[in-house]
Length: 229
Image (cartoon, rainbow, N blue to C red):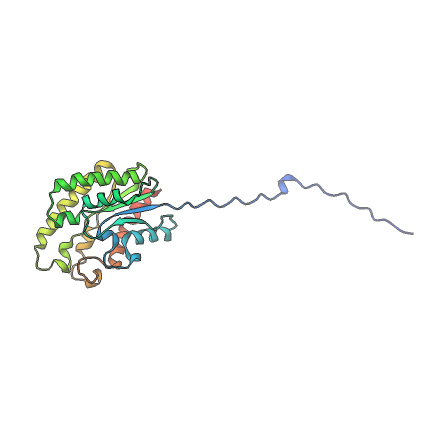
């Protein structure tokens, strides 16, 4: 005789037993960055990757940030007026930068221009930087002017007077930033601490080496991260 085994009916699967699909990872949107300035922004004499804005962006990404390598509008020798003119000629009309940095003024001081001229032109530059950041002053950061009086290039010059003038320019810059709600990062003390150490400078004895500019980037980093939150 043949015996037929009874087939068990199929079991219904409870909805609760269905595993949910994993959520898609959040999209990491890059944060565009614009750096404005002069020879200190382009890192005269140093490798492009050693420029302090490049190092700042790299440090931010190393810590999980999304800051892109910067667009740069800067050139050795520029004053505030020359930078403003170059910006106008650049054709860059973006207003979506997540961060804009500014470091300018040493050539105004070097040429002996009045402080009030610097103040007026810096106000215009800060307004331009804020416009690039979509109208948000909280996405703009300015670094103080380095004291070139403490470089090998300044040997034989009145280094004390240079320092006093740099301090006066930085006081103007800090006051203008505070007036507009722009972050101000002092780095002048770092440049003064480089005196006597050849490794802190490039071959011209005036501009700073990559390892030294890394100190600027590291000081600016926590401020910038706070702005980007």
